[in-house]
Image 1: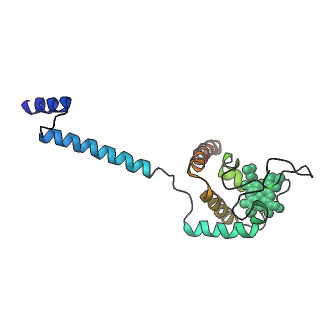
Image 2: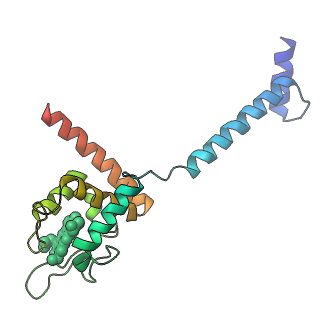
Length: 165
Ligand code: HEC
């Protein structure tokens, strides 16, 4: 009882009278603060795909996609404007455009089936090659864009799972 009174007194007036309980409380606060700082420092979301998958994706991207979407997936200037033929130019895939609106399954389908202008790759790339390319593209995205995408993708997958059951 006496100990706990000492503890509360010490806490409320902020004096450092140095009881063991007070020291423990201070240590606890310090530890919590350190953990919070460490969490913030580590909050950059980890990306899918290990190093060799992402490198393979980069190689496949360079071979199949770079001629239209650019060597760093930066797309074409004015990609939002239709060209003389009425088609849209290749958009950036580096996270600066709206590619992050599309979950992984949709990205894979676009690559498999192509678009109005974009050729289809379903016959020339395997599922895992397409997946490696997507991992490579995700590795280029800024943290906050990737985090938004990951959240949407997760929700989409959950809906997809429900429908599949
Ligand atoms: C001949 C040029 C060309 C090539 C090669 C090409 N694309 Fe495209 N891509 C386009 C164009 C143009 C669009 C816009 C849709 C359309 O009109 O086809 C597009 C759209 C996309 C989209 C949809 C982007 C969005 O935000 O909606 C993705 C993803 C994509 N391409 C990925 C790829 C990948 C990955 C490759 C290589 C495997 C590739 N593209 C190769 C021209 C190309």
